[in-house]
Image (cartoon, rainbow, N blue to C red):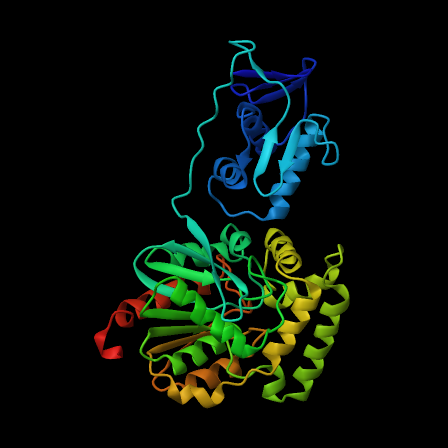
Length: 405
């Protein structure tokens, strides 16, 4: 099929873009993206449709998608300011705006290219916290419920297709109904909130599970979310069937009392305050290097973008200071649910000793130490298959075990 617009033509069979009959240099992936937009010029395409068709369901960052859109525009004499032919529809996706005709039926409607769809989907819903704050939560997969507590940097939609978090949520959705939510002040939840105390975060978890209609479920805590899970499990032992805590702590960085760590963290808070919202990602790169030091360039770009879009500089500071004073060590012995504690040996964000303290304090908790230096386990990490195996085995043993009541 040959599609014509202005003085351009795009040959789907010959995989060639021409301008006034002369070939235009274009990368294969950019060509496929342009062909998709041109062949479906009768409607807007969502980002998910573009990702599913061009990247075959692979997880890519916003930066990667943006760079390919930019390259497609440049190939046909367009740009992001004019958007004469390729338009970005905010909150929706993209649409080719030029008049398109097919070679075989000039002036006739273009037959759209069939679009593949990823099997995994999530549904985003909203509920109200005890103080009225709007909380966004997502439900994916099926089976016994697994609820993830909120942590510092999250964005339900952005994470779902990301190369840093996406493999977590898709893997955990295969055997469970996964429920996760953006905490107050971040992601799709309300940013304009007065209370960011730890107590408010625990109440938010209560609000989400009640809104989702869950009576009994397993909990997943990551980083700061581990303390929230511990507090909830101690308060509501009858509702927690099992608990998985990864890369977490019972006492925040101020509460741990290490003067060197306090000095380092205080300096980082000031860095957030002054540099978080700048267009230059150099400030946010400091955090990316700590959270995922082994990240690829694409993963690095994605995490830098996450830090920018997930919350405001002011909220980032407020939340960090709130987390710093968390101390639920006195609640560890009150946890009744079977608990699996996992930690990477070289984690630079939360020291291994913090994870060991959690495991030692919870009665009969299992402690698994894995090799690695990323705070977030990447899909390419050697520890990733073991993490998935440990979690699935633990849940199959305890999630529906009546003896854990």
